[in-house]
Length: 200
Image 1 (cartoon, helix red, strand yellow):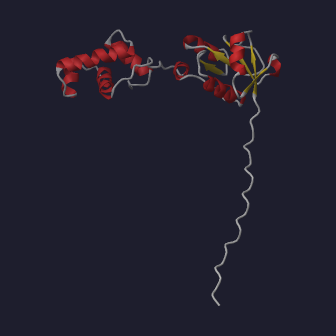
Image 2 (tube, helix red, strand yellow):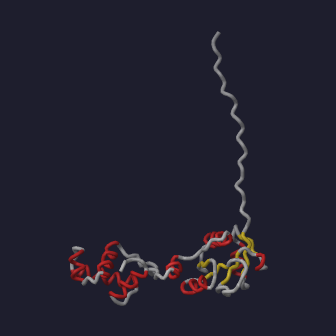
Image 3 (cartoon, one colour):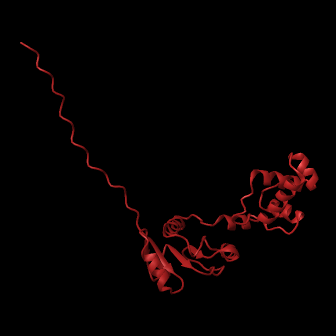
């Protein structure tokens, strides 16, 4: 009698997928009435807009809070010097007023969880360093030129050290000054040092 092929045991039914726990929406209140901004906040998936600041997890404002103010953490929508001033005044976070919805949503969640949110330029200013102007993007060669400028090298010395023609070295120096927004070689070195690009 021929052996019958063994049948594999029936597969166990798949276990039902456990849904990921849903995060409760962050309660957000505007410190100043702004219908357009309110509509923008209502459109965020992780946010619940409330009218009572005392019931909010995060407050959203355009100006920094009063230094003695107590209550929920504040996210200030500002840029540049106003952003730094807001952080110094006690804001927990700063974001550009034109920040994309996903970035605003993530920032509000982070602040509600006790984190701080700030742009790199504000961080550099708070740390006592000057941020490199946006789009400065010094190349590797320009960083070498900046290092030599910090060492007091003339264009002739820069050309010799980097094996460049005098005119090319001069062009690199001019490019470094322009990208750093510097008015002179010494100013370029000072700006580079404040931005952490060179060590003096």
